[in-house]
Image (cartoon, rainbow, N blue to C red):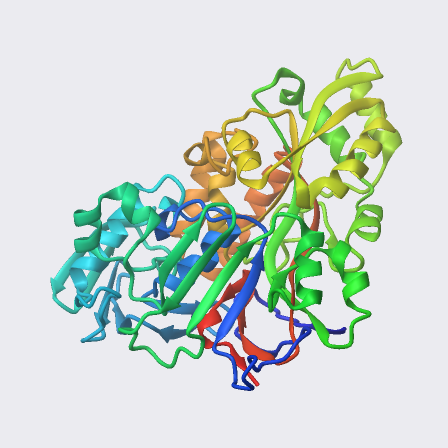
Amino acid sequence: MKRKTLIALMAVMLLVLPMAGCGGGADENGEVRTDLKVAVDCDADSLAPWDTILSTTYITRTMLFDPLFYYDTESKELKYYIAEDHQVSNDGLTYTFKLKEGIQFSDGTELTADDVVFTANQYKESYNQSVYMESVDTVTAVDDYTVEFVLKYPYSPFLIDVSNLYIASEKAFEEMGQEEFAKNPVGSGQYTLEEWKSAVSLRFVKNENYSDGDVTMDAVELVVMTDANARATALESGDVDVASIDVASVKNLETIDTLEIVECPSTKNCLISMNLTQDIFKDVKVREAISYAMNRAYIVEATQQGFATPTSIFYPSSVFGYSENVTTYDYDPEKAKELLKEAGITTPYDLGTLTCNESGSTVAEIVQQQLKEIGLDMKIQILETSTFYDQIYKANYDIAVVRIGFEADASTYDPMLTEKGIGNVNFAHYTDPELAELLDEAKATLDTDERMKLYEQVAEIVQSQVIYVPLYEYPDLWAQNANLEGEYRVNSVIEFGRFQWK
């Protein structure tokens, strides 16, 4: 297998790749195929775009719905989908979007400004996606094809946030109800759902009413394979054409000439989250000790095969707000032991359970070993991905190994640090009114240099308080059939409908 490494200076760069894998692009009759099978690591949880949490749901969102536009934070350019233009008021508080006329939902009804307002309000009320609408005061349909967003305050990353709104049909939602809509929604995207076999597969067929460019694949099937080895085996045998893979699969797949690994840039990192509602973790010295106990270089070498970069800094380097001018934690087990003594901890000490999902299990084993070296004992619990996140959202854990990423602006990480993220991605259950106030100020500051200074202050608080223990940054890894070519975006936002067989 060939390896293709994609390098992006910032996190949202558009990349066009030749893909690779085994098998050919012709069917049994010698015709060029117009279908695609993709192995994914988990089932979808909900198909409503405002309920998106799991990685598979981000893929289904892109298939079923279109956004107003795609925002490239590196070039500052927009690729319009539903919108065709936008204007910003002089005070930076009002954004007006002109919509394309004649866009149809998959049921044949026309998409109008009312649908955009409806979708924006659903995001506002969403438990999972409301962060993208925090800055918005009102959303109004000026006419059938004009939408006005009025902000509560000037907000520099607004275009990044609103690009995450994937527009759904208000009429279909009202007719179907929330529960049914989440199972079989109506959008204006490239596909409609044909069949969803829970924990098995999701099959999509071309939306015949799609009007924004060619859709080259008539059907796409997402095959749920929670085991990474099973995904790699299915790709090797030709049972699937594309697969998300982990680093453990790379060594074997690289020996296959007809396959290619694609290293896609991301804004993701792997970190240790501690449940700060527990007394033991309320002492910052204990948290510092855990951070000093981590030999990050060894973790990356032993588990990531070169596809990661060790770091103890909370914000990934690809995110605006990242700074090296903050407290960092080099590997120092003796310092870790001293801090435990200062905290009054007599070792060996039973720290409870280290929880992870399957993709984090090898990292968890090393974390367990390194904690044991400073006198902290833990047993490991491996959970299915959706169960894992459900438990850590609810703070039903002691320590967890978490892999997570957001957008290319530090503001999108706010829910991990504020009260609004409690019960969701604020895994640590950490709150600090002063930090929250500083985060609000950073979001409302338009001057780039001033925003950067504020985020350095934020980052220093996060670091010095050891709210989380970052381990490494990592890209997304995919392996693909050699006869495929397609378009990739950061964090595996993929338009499978525009892939092509050669």
